Image (cartoon, rainbow, N blue to C red; front, side):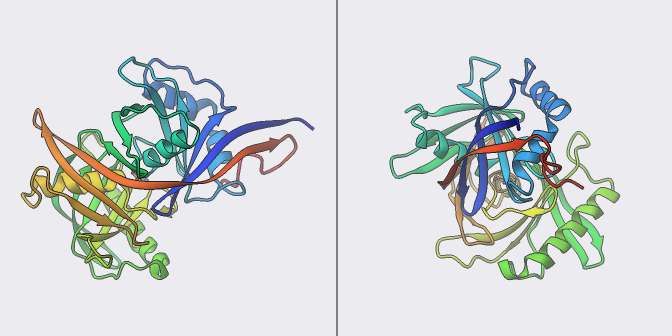
Length: 313
Ligand code: PYC
């Protein structure tokens, strides 16, 4: 029986898993990352579902396809994907990817310039193992938007940090892992209300991440969050792009100074340290966190397996 095989390295960043594809994936066509991502979606979407969804993964996994860059301005490229589709950028995934390259002995000593569909980012791992990434320009798009759901009204900001987020600063729920089902239901209702209300990103993009905040529970944190990701998962880490969007929003609201350190904790208690700097009028967030490698495997996709490409709806 013949089988396709794909080599991956698994890691987690603050509890959130990343599966980096390091071999066996077809070469994607395209002279830009957007074109390559379209080729991935058009021709190889079955590999996305086979790699991240059950039975090899689950809704919580984020995949990262490592490749050559399309420009000499970058050292490597990456396309992030999950149970629902493709991400513009992924902060926890970048930290996982850098730790994976370090594990493989393939990390340049200086900072790594990574090309993503959202733009070029840089990342550096220090000797203690922390990874700091400088993200794409992030911004507050809409301030104090109120949506109405069966669970009440929620007011928040629409902000961009490499993906689109609705940031709810004041809300009545405790952000606890044991309440994850209720938090998923509430945030999905908020996402649906944004959609039906026609509230979108700057160029009509769907706001596919919803972030709730509460008081922190871990020493040193400024805030705790629960982040609904696209599809059917929540982020176990504080979410790198979500924290970037929040920092940009806080800076624009006058609630965070340039260079001020902000510690965001996740629902699992894991932490990302962040700050912003302003370059040519753009807000550039920096996020610092830590990842650990959890596995090294060859995924096998056997001919004749009716669930070869994962369990899809
Ligand atoms: O860390 O940016 C992030 C992220 C996005 C979705 C899951 N994690």
